[in-house]
Image 1 (cartoon, rainbow, N blue to C red):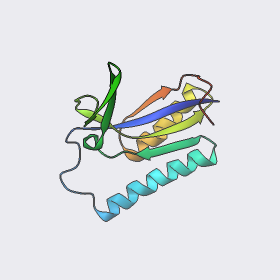
Image 2: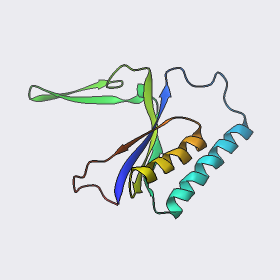
Image 3: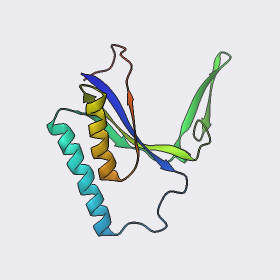
Amino acid sequence: MKQYLLATYMGEGAAPSSPPSPDEMAAFMKRVADVEQDMEDNGAFVFGGGLFGPDTATVVRYNNEETVTTDGPFIEAKEHIAGFYVINAEDIDEALNWATKVSTAIQKEIEVRPFRATGRVRA
């Protein structure tokens, strides 16, 4: 079984001008919970989570025998990773099927990328 990253991105200024209503938020949370339960029931779910915004990032860089830390994201970009899942899937087609379900649930684009086989990835 291979592992894949399903990542979602949020565009700069993509947050709605007003927060979702309680009913809209409840519907969103149910869709996400349903797809996560489906992943777990089918042995696909490994790990997942949402991330705080890029303004909370800290970058650690190695430079000439020392490390330097700086606040903020690694690069200035109009989009940033907002959340992700690591899943088990037999092949890319199965991973794309899960990505379709996640995309439908969160109503955002999903990037699918396979992990390189390093021998260190745990199921």
